Length: 569
Image 1 (cartoon, one colour):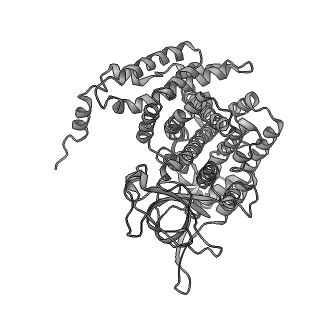
Image 2: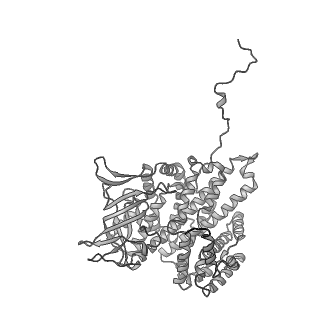
Image 3: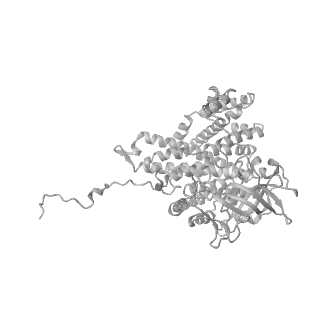
């Protein structure tokens, strides 16, 4: 018998890995966890039905939608070029979760709510509050929803006789609901559609058209229909160059059997993020389409679409910011380091606090743009409201980018970089939001165009709308002074300052919104603190950088020399 004092090693003792496993952050009802959203609605849209709907929607996000979104990430779309018998079919196959998200989107009225206008001027705020909650869980189904909303807006604004398409885009009936694509981008570029569109349209005897061309980037390519630009040719095959030659067309993309309408899918795009969304290169080889705009008015006709999709983009970006801050604070209560929880490390909480201030400012900015859109659609907008909507839409889109999501991942340490936590996909997917529908520089130039096109009226509306606030008012005066003098400076000064000007407009307006919310009678001490912290920063970088000589005539030459230093021919 063995000695009673002899230690016998347990089987497989060398494989012991300890007993500690980090508890993961849990997603709970995002509506009940969002103090600012609930306060904003209490102040502006205190309808009990809205509160109940968003409460139930928040529960559905946790119990059903979050898992569907994750399934879409893990089961990306695939292209089936041929059937079993060798016939070319070009089918884009998506997972069941993607289809289920389409049905849920219809049921919840994620497009319909914007057109039912149940809540008058505040209908868009109601709709976008749901999109804001939905976006971080939805496996990027917000992409087809944005384009669907944009297509519905174009059809409504043009008043063209395609009633069935409009009704299908805006229905709550999941069996009738259509999504729309937005096939504009060709090989020559994205934003510059005027010179980049080569697709041609040939008129048929029945009044319809056949489209021929190559679309280099088509998102949500599995959509039921699409809007696209093309140049109408005469009987000799000639077309008009530039924007005046572009017309807007509507086409059903697939027939009832899932076969394509004169389309060859060349390949699906292999992207950094948004892998859930089928994005493809398409050859249009006689796609049957209906003229939607007046001939040569295609670019003007998509202006409303751009407004809608840019607002969706902004709201989705803010939704990503809010989701990462929620998960960060949840994790800080569960993760210990250096003998105490992260929530008890003042430096960590300070970092989260700064992310929170950025998120609050972005939320209020996004909702203000939604409010202005709602007023315009309900024909209650003042001239100032209309001008502000034109100016603020590109500014809101360019400002709400990926920095908060990126910083938020750091709070999870190494786990923020591990794929099966689901966290890295948040950063990858958020990155597209600063690219799609105009990069930051393109949007900055759009701000300049809106100023020039309105002869400065949009800036006057901006300055008039700002609230009385010592710090904001001071920065506003500095900005006004810069704007007054910039036009008289050498050519190129305004373009060099465009990005900083846009950021200055954003920060000043966001500061005003935070101050306005902090002065509400039911505001909390955290609302006041957020406004104070926002106004601590340089709200007007365009003035600071102007004083540093960043827009002097020789700056562009020095920038070029610096960037291309050492580059060999």
